[in-house]
Image 1 (cartoon, one colour):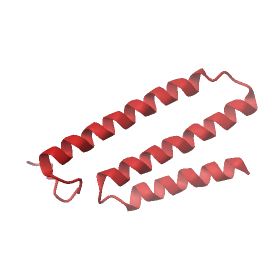
Image 2 (cartoon, helix red, strand yellow; image 1 turned 90 degrees about the horizontal axis):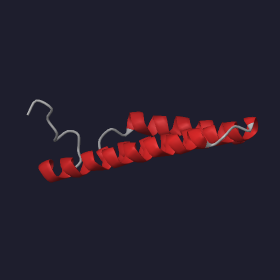
Image 3 (spheres, one colour; image 1 turned 45 degrees about the horizontal axis):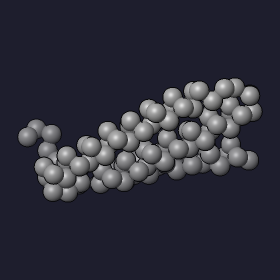
Length: 93
């Protein structure tokens, strides 16, 4: 039952990621939700198989780095353009 809840969280995060592409902050929050669901799935799997939790620590380190990188992109985008709309951001500029 727990696996189905975690998979539902994963697919819900993916659906939000695909549908809400107007603001960068919503995209970053949905990515963090996906990372959280993957972390929970790995935790349940490692506890069932009685593995070491070193891989989870490595996964958490990379997910924190991904979150910090996303927030730095968000801050730089707000400083240069004034908002986080993707429509106001021109890649050819």
